[in-house]
Structures are given as C-alpha cells and as structure tokens.
Length: 110
Image (cartoon, rainbow, N blue to C red):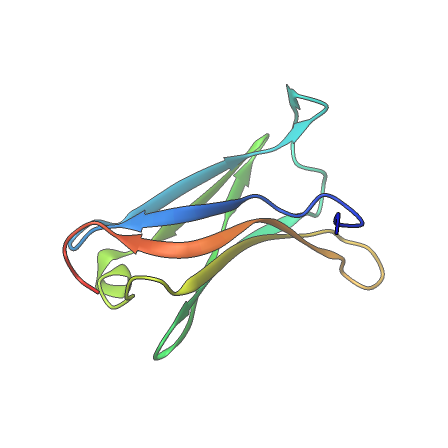
C-alpha cells in the first residue's frame, strides 16, 4: 500500500566513541536553499536507554546546527531510534519530522 503522503527520509546516524555529534540541517524548498521561517525551532531527539537525549539547534539563515557532546553520544548504543523535528510557530505548534532512523555505531560498541 502506498503512503498517503511522503514520509520523512530514514537515515543511519553514525556515532563513534569520543566524537561529538555535529549535524547541520539545511532548509530547502523546491530544491532551493532558503532561510528557516521566522520562529521555527529544530530539535534532535535520540532515544537512549537512560532517557531521551535532546539537542536544540542554533538557526542561522538556512542552517540549523545541532551539537551533542561525546560524553552523551558515547552512552548511546547501536540501533536506537532518533529523529530531527522542526516545530513551526502555529497555534498548536506543528511538529514536522524532517529525518529519522537508527543510530549506527562505528566503534565496535553495540
């Protein structure tokens, strides 16, 4: 069965021991890079066993820059779920999942 609408892309989020997670999401509309709308916030959520690890993006024009320190990423096992969400400043605060997937460890840790 076909999805009713286009689902968010699923990607592996690569992590390695001792490395900070630095991720920049660039806003695009109709294939063109464009500034994030005023008031939009972007968040990264990783479902770690000890609880969800969250990062709030610093938005600069079309770029949403996310950072999680290695002290936190080193605790995240292979295979846990993650998602990047844009929250639009509507009355209800519409949350749109931009990307999601699972963590892929690249240091032998499972």
